[in-house]
Length: 260
Image (cartoon, rainbow, N blue to C red; front, side, top):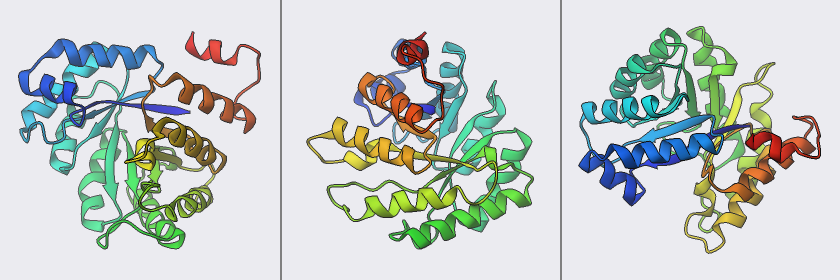
């Protein structure tokens, strides 16, 4: 499982204050904590803490110098993502692009040039899809576009767009069905990723809902997740689900082996 640590995000008060005050120690500490917890990528999201390009580049450089991990570059402006790719020491995961031709044509040349990977949100000009069929249709558009630019399926992470269970309960089943169908585009298939905490937004049983839905998604093809990598119960459940899906070799010490 590709674990994308979500914690360096200005949505967290501590991180936002650290960005505003240029407090490097707080950010380095969270980078190291997530690396020690075996994150595969660290998501770097400046959010609304600053609109300055230089501040995002400062944050990216700070995190990659603190830990020896590739980054997930999380920004809503494509030119900023391209500038950040230029300074990455390891090929990053770009978060994200939608199924809009103009935006894909703007971003994908840089994805190809820097050998990056990219998260494709299966939404278009009409917004977030509500049906399985629309999710698959938009995923197909993204997949076809990467082929045009010589980007391999293994560089594409398709995101079926996880919706809050509390407010859109009917969407959970549609998301699972869409994830299953994404696997049919190619062999080997593209990755399937999700921002897990979205499903429990506004609920009182966040950890339980996150854990349960993640396991169900793994059964439908999920192999990457944006999550709180410090949640050991969640990570242990993921490791176990992958074991049951025959994606790893059983050993009595499989959890201990992962953490070593």
